[in-house]
Amino acid sequence: MNVLVVNAGSSSLKYQLLNTETREVFAKGNCERIGIEGSFIGHTENGEKGTLEVALPDHRTAIKHVFDILKTVDQPIEGIGHRVVQGGWYFPDSAIVTDETLAQVREVAPLAPLHNYAEADVIEICRDMFPELTNVIVPDTAFHYNMPEHAWRYALPRDVVDKYHVRKYGAHGTSHRFIWRTVHEFMGDKTHKLVSCHLGSGASLCAIEDGQCMDTTMGLTPLDGLIMGTRTGTIDPATVFYLNRVGGYSIDEIDTMMNKKSGMLALSGRSSDTRDIEEAANAGDENCAMAMEMFFYRTAQLFAEMAASMEGVDTMAFTAGIGENSDTYRQGVADRLAWMGVKIDPELNKVRSDDPRVISTPDSAIKVLVVPTNEELMIALDVKRLIEA
Ligand code: ADP
Image (cartoon, rainbow, N blue to C red; front, side):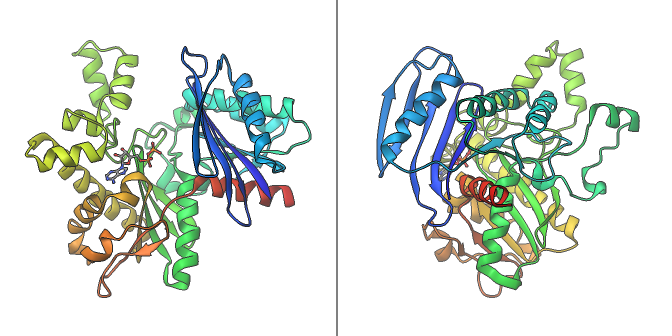
């Protein structure tokens, strides 16, 4: 089945047209600066990249252009999958778009206002423009929906929790689900307790036991858990009150500070990109060296936390930008888990490949893998599954 996967942000729209059987990607691209001066579409087809400078006053115009561009591919589009950041309390699985499910995406939007409103608008536009196509909602949170109550519940007053639906929702669920699926295909019955480590500019770990999410490091929002490119990760929540009352920062300023100005960017004082940080650390920058040390430390600590949530772990998988590409970061994390019996082979760790691969030594207590993630394929497979059902 040919599926168009759409990932809408407030001012961007990524798309990919692929086939679920052959996994061939016919074309992909990104509409950038929607509603802002200087908008353009970066499009890749047959390995060739092109840029189309075009006015994109709104998402509807962007989608119109995407469908026009995709005409040159000459492949029928048989379904559309929409990545949705927050499924809230409604989506334990992906779902076909109906009036009801679309309203639910909007209802939970206050939990992820920068994403869900734009995503809901784009879903509505696609339904309106191409009524013959089935649209599917694929929430990033769905995989975490059924984690045990002791993992998702927050120790806040019950009336507050119930009224405002405050709980751990997690994120990166589509990626973690894909990693489980791939590891399971690759390792067969040897894997039962997997910690999936999605380390990109956003980063989260997920404990997965026989395909079931047992816990994850992101919380009500993606701010929780690991130190990330520009996010703090877990810090004492009272920091917010303190900065507000004593520092005089408004809640919005603290929100921006903790989401956009913190993390590796703040620690390094240079960049949110781990490549720049590593280069500077190698050249003697102490802040960058400390930023890396803290990232390794926190990842190892949270790995152990995820293992505890399953009362064991047999497999660890690294994925996303840092996890797939940086042997330094993988080694740094593994070194801090040597006490758990994690041992990676430095030669295997240096191998570069687009395929899943084992990088641990034969005597490692935990199998360590690198598994390139493919959220678009996972979304497309959901579209096929739901349409065929
Ligand atoms: P997201 O999808 O969350 O934006 P990605 O999964 O694409 O993030 O990861 C982006 C991050 O991966 C960047 O911050 C970059 O620092 C990091 N990265 C990519 N390649 C490498 C590399 N070779 N070494 C270290 N870090 C890398």
